[in-house]
Amino acid sequence: MAMNKINGGMEVIGADGVHVGTVDQVEGDRIRLKKSDSFGHHKGHQHYIELGFVADVEGNKVRLSANADIAVTLEEEPSGRPVDLG
Image (cartoon, rainbow, N blue to C red; front, side, top):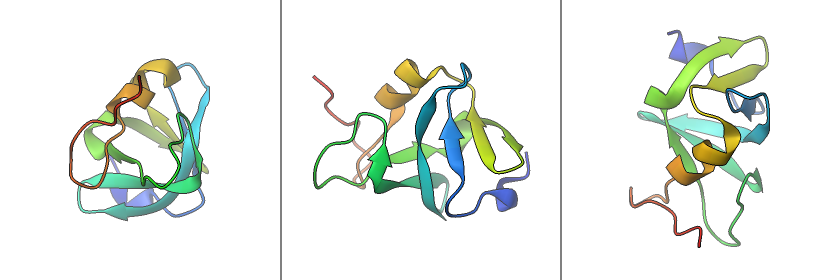
């Protein structure tokens, strides 16, 4: 997988094609999503998705290996702890 093709502003979509968020930047082995545009957005929290969940990079889209409703449960806070969505 060509992770070096992931850039800020790219759309992140689930395997089902549903919008999950927009890439802010890649930090190490995670994608940081823009605070203002992430599925399951929590005010004041930065959301991250592990690069291991990236299935493909297609044009200006980052496709995940999980559907959007599952991908949101994979989002993490900067500390690496899963985000409490409930």
